[in-house]
Length: 477
Image 1 (cartoon, helix red, strand yellow):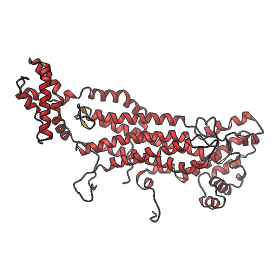
Image 2 (image 1 turned 120 degrees about the horizontal axis):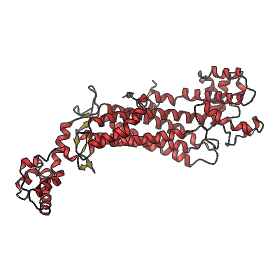
Image 3 (image 1 turned 45 degrees about the horizontal axis):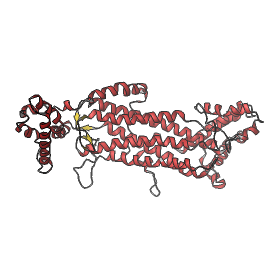
Image 4 (image 1 turned 180 degrees about the vertical axis):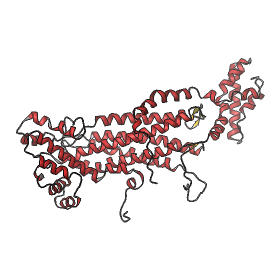
């Protein structure tokens, strides 16, 4: 490790080795060579005088990139693609003259970008599915456990711990839908020349339009794609990068929401993210158990959401058929967006896999607020016992305010039940009132909703992708 230069935290701390490889020089330049081979094979099959011996020579050096030659050449010519054409030609003297024939730099650059993004999206898809699977298991386990729900972070009607988890699942499932759609629409640029007109191929194939029409489909098939974009300038539309990064931004937003909820629940001591035996929560306060992984999810998620603006602005400011102010930005925004979302999903996997639930704390907080939420049921019971609804409504409002003052001003326990029992207008004993304090009576259809959602939506999704499930998170720090 070098200690005298900047090291990216995304590669040193957060992203997996798998995702880092997708955006590595080896992956990039080996893909360039695969594309040059596909182009040469296509041109040979369509009748250009390219020999099988030349093709085999290119294939024999598809993996062993001579970086030193390319690096020295680039210092001289200031052009990365032509430097690698030169380096490849040094290794393949027989094929030297047909490498990159008829193509422009974007043939390797842009096609590689699409290939890399497609493979990176597949890694993201797999990890997203595993997050959904682990959350589904959590929701199933706690679908019946009543907990205090919040609106505006103020106590509201109860829900269940499992029902709350389904809200997280549903947002991640929406992201999965978006990802699968965008990934399914990705196409290669193909080989369309300097302004997208394929003029160079008109020369190479002596104006044979039907033959030229076959070039892009043949290259796409060789590279594992169904098609190329039907029209382009020199580059594929930078709108493609915008769509891809918007998918990552959506996942980041869902992860941020999830991590915020965990952080709040950990503050309430109801749910905690995993905390290792040797982990230190604070350098000064040894007793602390900070939600550091959830905080890191939130931190990286904000980065991804902001990063998604880069491709959008770049797409909006492209000039006519090509302008190069996209290049430096793309080299940063696209890889770093993927590396960050990769780290986020690994953190989500780790957190969900080790979530600790404290039912007694959950019950205590819920029971402290439940008398307020049970007032409608209490009032109905009092009406059945002969009371007047309108009078009872006013009395219960007054008593609720008194009990609230006892809690907030005097620091006492919630004594609403005692106050109601002492009021003759209700004609209910304390024992009768306490019988209404069963939390399961107030969670509505939450357990049923959880089971229905898992059965009808999530389990079929997971079954369809069961070969991708079972992965563990790669956490570096």
